[in-house]
Length: 340
Image 1: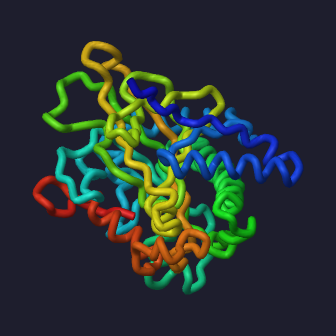
Image 2: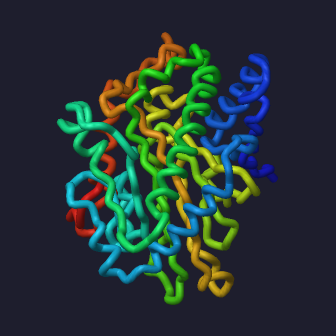
């Protein structure tokens, strides 16, 4: 009987505070994790959980608003994820060209807090990548709490990308100029209690990969959570580690690394029938996206005579735009609203 491969837990403290040798050791651990399953849990990251707990608190308050108030905050720019996304607005399995019922979740999405107003932001793909954020009125502290959480995750993402560079045999700053005008997004996602039986094949979030470089996730330890697909093809729960964040590789990292670090397939399962179906779930996610004009082409250390590039070069923003368009479809194949 094969022993299930666990999700590696990697302590970043020595890499962030210690000598160069410690950075090399931790980056090697990251390389093993992302190259073998695509998931890891990081601890010792230095983030203040109190500020993230506040972001979770105000997010729950937002999702408790009347539906009419939430729907007023849907994005008004087609192709840009901003503001409220309701149940039925998104089906992430469509990003893999797999039809399924809409995901059983609601989300609030924000982008870069203060992108500026130059043409990089206001023209072309920049209009989608840096679409204006939308904020509810009457929720004191909501905006400041989410912006604080965004900045905290932004710092961790920078640390992780530098360690990823070392793990790929690159200079530590190799990714820096690909993320100096990044368009990463923060999302609070609420999975309501399941008081009625879901439709056949309907999940809290269907099987998908993320169209990011990395995804960083703070999850709750309640039934009906994140699962990843093991190399053997079985689905396994991702554990909630106190003080830890789940990190997984996305499509862009797979593209960059020639699938040396492949994009990780995952889903959010329904709670077992009769065991927590009336319990909701809230997750905070940070999607690590590079500059929208970053050219996604095979990293030099990930190709060779026996490993030619699998993918043609593509701009990161265009790849993201196409994935978003697919996720905002319903079973009929008709777009139901704005994405981004």
